[in-house]
Every structure is written in C-alpha cells, then in structure tokens.
Length: 264
Image 1: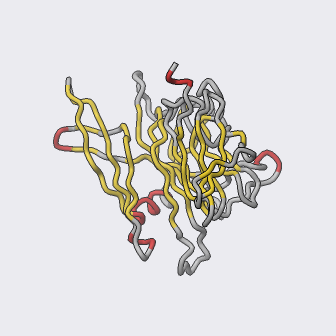
Image 2 (image 1 turned 90 degrees about the horizontal axis):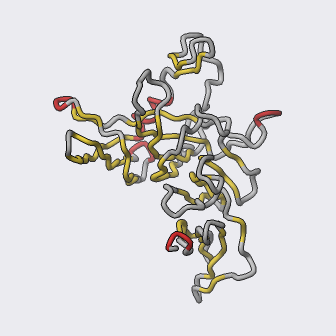
C-alpha cells in the first residue's frame, strides 16, 4: 500500500518565482509548479510526469533544470523496463535515448546528474554538457555471470537531434565506465551509490566524488573515488568500442575516427 503514496522524486527551482516538482502519484507520475512566495501548489498546471519521474518510488532517478529545460534519467514505463535519459520543457524539442542495450542496458540505477558550463572561454566553440551517473549491467565483457559496472554518460546542452531516424534522439550521447578499485586487494567497486559535484570558478577545476559499494567475501565494503573533469573529458575523447554483429560482441573501434567524431 505504501508504494501507492505520492513520493516526491524531483524538486528544483524553475525560475525566480516557481519550483518544479514531480511525484510518483500512485504509479501515475505527475509534475506541477509551486509558487514560491506562498509555497502554494498550482492545481491547474498538473502535467504528465512520464519521462520526468519514475512510476515506482524504489527506482533510481536523477534530474536537473538547466535554462528552463528538464534533463532527467528515469524509467519511461510502468514496468520499469524502458530506461531513458530525456530532455523536455523549454524551447527545444523533446530528446531521449533509444531503447537499445548499447545506450542503456537492463535496469540501470540512476544516481546523479551535473551541469558543466564547458563553453566558457572555449577556443573551439565547445558546448555546455550535462553528465549522468549510474550503474548498469555490462554487455561489453565476456562473462557468464552478470557484471554490474558504474558509468558516466554525457550529452551536449545544444543537441537538437538529427535527421530521419535520429529525429528527437541524442546525437551527442556518450558513456564510459567509472573505475573505482583497490588493486592491492584486487577489489573493484562497481555499484555506484551517490555522486557529489564540487564546482569551481573555472569549469576545468570541477571535481566529481563518487560513493561506491562492493561485496568482499561476506562483507559489504565501500569507497570514495575522485574524478577530475579533465580526466572524464579525456576518456570521452579517447578510443571507443563498437558492436560487431558477426561476432556478436563489443570490440575496440579500429578504423579511422569520423570527423566530427561521435559525441562531438
């Protein structure tokens, strides 16, 4: 019965006069605006919360509002089988990931998101980025047992999608593995639990701190790992993998990198 309560999963400032709130609303997610001066609910402006808030209060979720647009990582259906990273509200078209394992696999656990203004003082005209942190089942490794890994994904704020089959789909989406380990114990912390973003006056000094968990024998252990934004950026600019249909497995892309490169 308690799962059918309305669990508020998102509450952020929308503008100088209103907050934007989303709740599970008994597995029928809804969103609305809250007027700040009197902290009153706008009863007229209830909106469908699909893609903005999970149906199930136990599912991981993250979101943030950037210049009036909501970026969210959640599940797009009642069964919790359609993970999605989506942008809506604001002036742009709604954008989302595809329902493919190469984008988001299985039932990822979304943890956190961050906005980094990488366009500031950029000599190459770089765009601002939105980062998402989560854990998911890995598909790129040859393992009999299910392997869960931590990820960081990135999209460009100015992404407007592509043509034809890429309409309303991210064209800048990239993801990479977040490695947190204790090599001397041969221990890998793969389950991401929380992320804190430490901003800085210069975006190049931004730092992410991740809280991870792992199983070591019969004991649950945890660790905190630090990631500098330039290290994350370097990973996204490095070699990448592709899915090879004939071998039915992932492998390192060995051909010449297209220009502009994927995710640019």
